[in-house]
Image 1 (cartoon, rainbow, N blue to C red):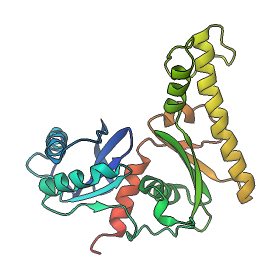
Image 2 (cartoon, rainbow, N blue to C red; image 1 turned 180 degrees about the horizontal axis):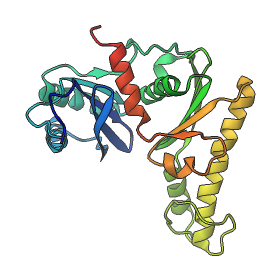
Image 3 (tube, rainbow, N blue to C red; image 1 turned 120 degrees about the vertical axis):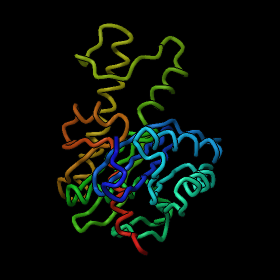
Length: 264
């Protein structure tokens, strides 16, 4: 159970297209974290009930965090989230959006187009690894975000996520069936299911390493690479280019950005 008086608490909320990840920080320490399904039609009352239940499990039912920071890629949840978090904490939540201080220059042609989660990941990766570095986020889409040696957000690559790719295959091919996405023992499958698993895992892994290699050639350097997201551990272990894996990297980035905007 959390000692509510130990340190100022911060609730970090990462709202993705498929999942929402929440983290409760006490100072720089991630004390608790949770993963929920993102419901685009969720009401503010439903969000209040869910978040209060999570905080209660962490010993914060009567002493909720006073500060909240949110990165969301789901526009329809912005209003109910703001209402719910304001009701829980009594204060206005901070959203990662244009105008917030990230400490990272954005070299994108249209900076407002960059997803909040991508900037947050880049901030956390540069703080941890220095630059140049690449963050690979295995989410609904798989994103590759590049940070220069000077700590600038250079841009990136977006490809369909592995789950989306698998669903497209299963829906379009009548004689192929759904399989668990996991690492097979061998590349050459001896059954249809094994062949599909091999193609999904090793094919996607080759995509990941191949994109990183092309990024390296383009920037003329070998960047350090970190993976995050729900399937980061599965693919990070088989990659020849991914050096570190942190499924909760986005939460760390949210904490860092909150610190850079405190009092401002």
